[in-house]
Amino acid sequence: MESTSLCSVTEPFLVEAISRAKSRLVLVAPGASEAIARAVAAVWAWLGPERVTVVLDVDPEELNKSLAWASGCEPPYCPG
Image (cartoon, rainbow, N blue to C red; front, top):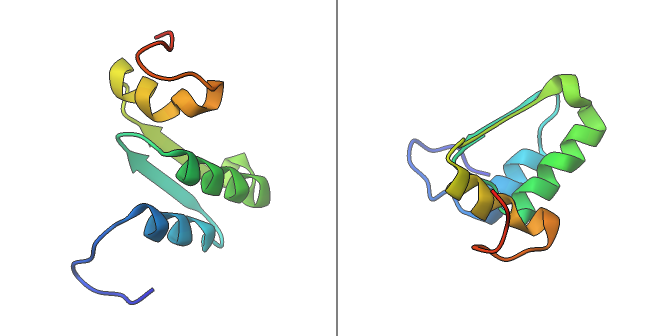
């Protein structure tokens, strides 16, 4: 990844950046797609939970949409 002041942050870009974490990962976002969550989970398994911090939007609607894949349900049918 080339370092610039402005860049397009796409899902593949974030997945690559997350997977390159070497000592610590902090993700602050309104939500996370399945691909991003899987990348975080891989880093979590490698670095350990004490080195990974994830902060997601507490808005139930946003959280429900971004984590619906985990339970296999489709919004708006997910509880929450």
